[in-house]
Image 1 (cartoon, protein in one colour):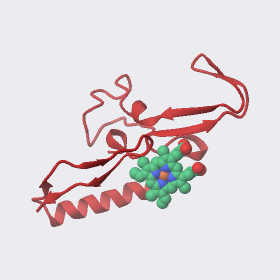
Image 2 (cartoon, helix red, strand yellow):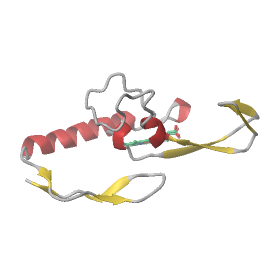
Image 3 (cartoon, protein in one colour):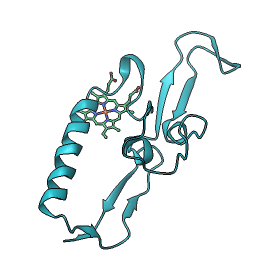
Length: 119
Ligand code: HEM
């Protein structure tokens, strides 16, 4: 789900020295923004990228960032989601979406205002 519809879509870095990235010159101090949401749907990396495949393997998506500043809470987030979604699924096995989700429009961080379900 973090790859398919994760919350963080853009992250930025300030370049600490002149460098070349993807054939482009980047000067010290310039800001580079990475569109994680676009990388998450890269068809050359993820076959059928628009499909939510629960057991997609490999699934090396950048939704939690990479490198020294990668998400410190990634494992917590995965465990909480597994627990919460598992509990809802067990306690309300008939739960189904009751309305279209109401998305929270935000360029960098995606989410929902609401997702109504019937049980
Ligand atoms: C689905 C849930 C989450 C997603 C998709 C997510 C995603 C991210 C992303 C993309 C970054 C930026 C990484 C980078 O700049 O390379 C980040 C940073 C961070 N996240 Fe999360 N995060 C989630 C939940 C959490 C939770 C639950 C916690 C804390 C318990 C947390 C704590 C942090 C911290 C402390 C950083 C900053 C790390 C640093 O700058 O060194 N995150 N997260």
